[in-house]
Amino acid sequence: MSHAPPPAGPSDRTGPVATSVPEPGPAPGSRDQAGRHRAALVTGASSGIGAVVARRLAAEGGWRLVLNGRDTARLEQVAAQVGALALPADLTGPGAGRLLTDLVLDHAGRLDLLVAGAGVGWAGDFTGMPHARIDEVVGVDLLATLHLVRALLPHMVAAGSGRIVLIGSVAGSFGVRGEAVYSAAKAALAAFADSLRYELRRTGVGVTHVIPGVVDTPFFERRGAPYTRAWPRPVSPERVADAVWSAVLHGKDEVYVPGWLGFPARVRGLAPGLYRRLAARFG
Image (cartoon, one colour):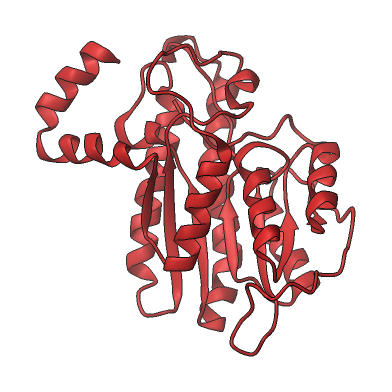
């Protein structure tokens, strides 16, 4: 199940390359106390959740936006729509997170918000999963985000403000049949969000973990296996973007989308045996 929109395919670029450099729009929305535009970086922004989050931030106004993704053509199209800087790159490349951070800071002078939405999936029995796909899923869904956060976090801490939004998946909360590695990577992302939040206490930097269920994006088409379950029904990426914006506004730590997904999470915590029996039966 789930999720964060994946890049469409690997890039032959070794690092981020600016493809457009617009000026921020004069909207009165998200500015700091001195009236300066805040800066946001959205990864996985060429389609799906990341693209819709970028459009939502642009609609709120006042953000200097930088977008990252691996599909250059689609990323440039989204960036043109929202007046953002496009930095296409494969973040699994060596040093890509640090290079992207440097380019964002060179362009915007600061970074107030990261929405880490890049992700890929794979469906099928674990015993049949190619080794290369294991490395790709873990590399894109987990390691690339860790390296990017490691590169940009010192700048947020030094500024005494900022928010990191990690787009996870319900697959990381419960585990999903046929998505063992994807579930493992997203579960690790959830643990990272909690640990980092404790570490950043009193620094002024917040961490939000957004946990979507099934989202109506090209995720399933690109992983090569459609979503076929009758329930739960997919939600729109706009609904996830609304949750991201609400979390940013109100400083929320964890958000399930839709909200009722928090109930099985509580059942799993309170009665794990019962939960596993039900999950084994209903999948």
